[in-house]
Image (cartoon, rainbow, N blue to C red; front, side):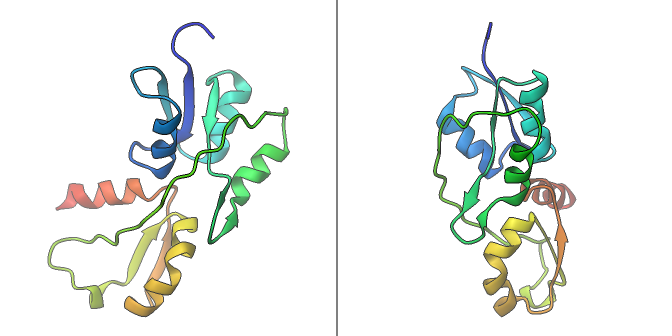
Length: 146
């Protein structure tokens, strides 16, 4: 592995996966390679585009992360090297002036949606889930509109 080690992770910057990655290697000591999804992060290691992948394996509410477990089960074998625990919290954001009662759609990663479903059912009943590859990307898009 000449040079800095390359780490593929579920991007973009700001995801909980990047938070985990920062516990493993600093951006000064490693090259961060954000990926569109977990499968791409794992495949980056298999193809040699990355030396390591940081991926979510499980959550305390949802259990095993199916996409990760499925991607690890097929293809050339990989070795799990380290476990990192990341405390997770979520914030519902919207454009200025939008009241909570007016929320009709929530863009979120499917795991985030499941982790927040009780709160969402109580505070924004009837809101429709709009699946997103990460929570960070929709939040950044919303911020750009403000």
